[in-house]
Image (cartoon, rainbow, N blue to C red; front, top):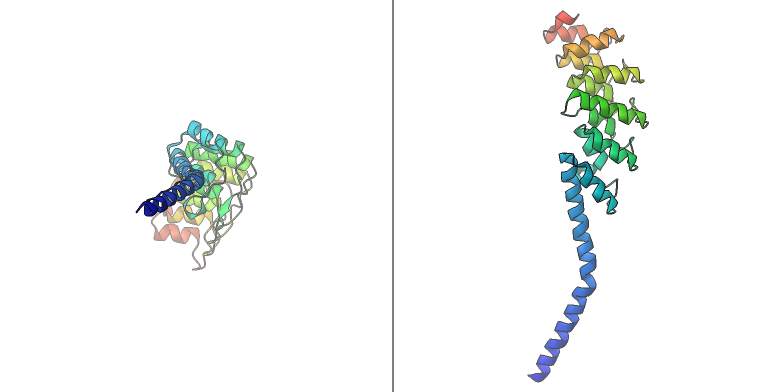
Length: 220
């Protein structure tokens, strides 16, 4: 029995040493996961000071969340100007894209005030985001902004080099997207800026044809 006890003690000792040896690594991993979760929550709350604290603690500016999104993509998707600026100032890539979906596109589809979206878009363009990159459906940031109904964002993008008559995989232009969703202010702004209303979709429909179908003909 004594021998058994000694064996047991010896096993316990080995087990304890094993835990001590592995624990720091496990804690680091847990801490990293906790930090990632804290960063995600801080991004959607717009808590710039906590985000800065987490970045100072060593968390990567290009940390990957669900679907491969980075902190900058998350901040842009809610058009949080202060957080986007903080992340860009800390070295985040304004040209980041995931599966051809860019940070600029995320900003142009944000559910936020147009003022915040405009400021965020302006900031991203000032850091060399390309307004003419297209997603897998061949949609550009301008098309996304037109589809969401943001006339000031649309005007700003066109003023900064967005191709106003670019067409997506179905032949839709920014103007056609605005017509499809009934965004009168965007339609008028695009026409004022010289959008071609005679371009056709793959179904051979023009913006005016779609306006008639969707009962928005008054804008033409």
